[in-house]
Length: 167
Image (cartoon, rainbow, N blue to C red; front, side, top):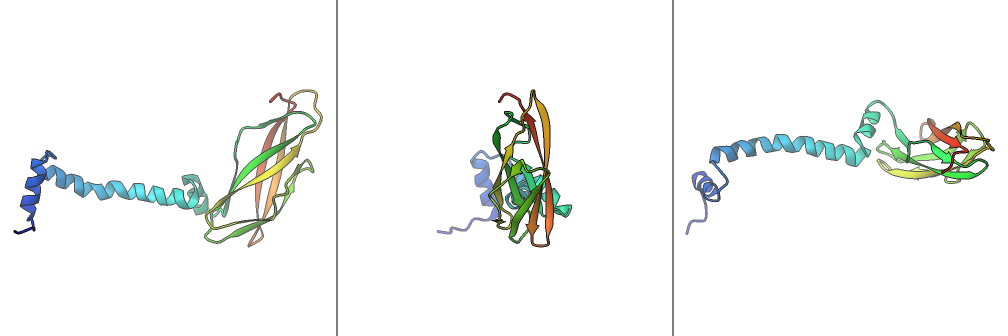
């Protein structure tokens, strides 16, 4: 018994299974790699850089992407302390260390540093914000500068708050 099929027999069996005309199947198979390549590229980019935005930032020379977990202004009761979470993604192919931070006022502080982030990975960083006393809702904006090693690199992050707003 001959187990080898020539292409004519294989295409004939495709017709018998109801998959359509053999030329349609050949056309579909010819376009399949062109459809899969963009999907594979997108998958590789989002796996390595977290998002297309992270990939674009790396192409523009950025080494770190810092994003507040929730980008809307945080509502903070007056004269209270609140916690702010930010996400720090290393866009490089080597580990980085965040060894310190400076802020525009002493009302913003963290105890999570120093922190090492492996290549192409993401970590969460927590900040505490001590809101001032306020009579009514007031917007507050604090700038935090992260000090990153190697290369004595710095990244600025803006944290927005609404002080005295009900949560």
